[in-house]
Image 1 (cartoon, rainbow, N blue to C red):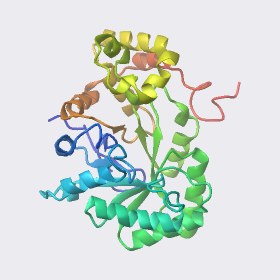
Image 2: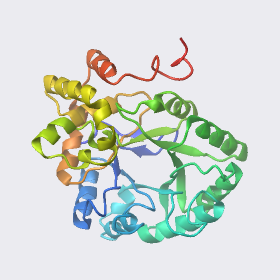
Image 3: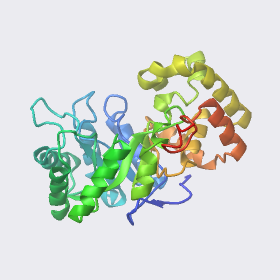
Image 4: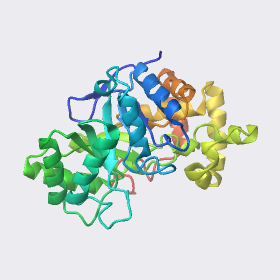
Amino acid sequence: MTAPPFHTRLGRTALKIGRFCLGTVNFGGRVDEAEGHAIMDRALEHGINLFDTADMYGWRVHKGYTEETIGRWFAGGNGRRDSVVLATKVGNPVGDGPNDEGLSAHHIIAACEASLRRLRTDHIDLYQMHRMDENAHWDEIWQAFETLTTQGKVRYVGSSNFAGWHLATAQQTAARRGFLGIVSEQCVYNLVTRHPELEVIPAAQAYGVAVLPWSPLHGGLLAGVLNKLRAGTAVKSAQGRAAETLDRHREALQAYEKFCGELGRDPALVGLAWLLSRPGVTAPVIGPRTVGQLDAAMGAFDVELSQGDLAVLDSLFPPIGNGGAAPDAWIT
């Protein structure tokens, strides 16, 4: 088995995770339970130990189904739960009630208890806020997470889809309360979507927050979508996020796939290798639908991109403004 060349720390914590995070958003509807269990088994064999889910995943079957799938896998024993750094999320709607979403203390604690039941475990290693709730004050949010960590039900707190100033405000408030605060941020980040380079990644680096990019191939757009469409083999890349932005990036993607061909590398592996090379990136979140896709993704660790290669990729998918962090990115 190919294993990540090393494990790395989750932000400023001493917790060690692999350089890839296993995303489970496809479990339920796109990945059946048997295949999902096989993917999780293989992930551990590859040295991937951070598994990411959310309380609303599995909505194609019913919300919570993905956590239930993972819980049944944990119930199989063989030290699975102890081998996994388990991450789930709270905040997106999970029901029709007025308090079935958001980051009120009421919902955070109730949602945690529900996730624990579905996951068949007594603790969540990384409990992440799925999105910012502008109606929730940080003192209320941190009070809820402090309660859960004191009870031993949550080990660390993370965020997802936050702005840079959200991270800064959260950390300053947590520090005032003597709380560890946020240790990781999940943001959409890839060659096509480079906005996090302006403020999110610099803020994360300043506060010791791990960056876990989701949609590292932009829903398959960077996985050789044009070749797949011509061959009639496009699945995920023919729908959703990838399909919505295909025409806008078609010219760049043609050049990208040609460049990957010249490198003799699969476009998906080049896109993942680029992310692995980026400053501040801890572990991209990959969402394989088969064991074979997971095995193939590990090839990204064998792709070495030279400075010249990186310059070509910058020319095809330019960073915003002058590149780098704000405000220098837009000062002329």
